[in-house]
Length: 79
Image (cartoon, rainbow, N blue to C red):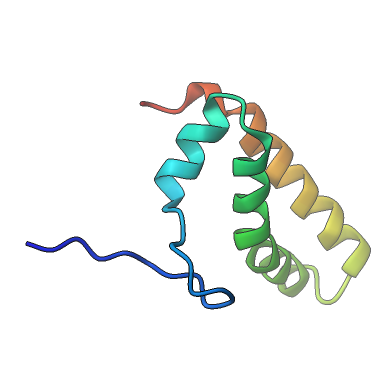
């Protein structure tokens, strides 16, 4: 079977799979974690904003807290 490769819609380049970004972030690559934040930050913020009924400041703080906790928990993820 042929593997499918996701392409970045912006550039047409190969989009690094999340699992590879997490593995790289676990090894200390700050750019890999930044890519995950860029991919999922808007969605996390949107959920927080919806739950907080439009309180943008608190939604932003919670989004940052969620990613901080995710970063701190990287070492606990199974390989």
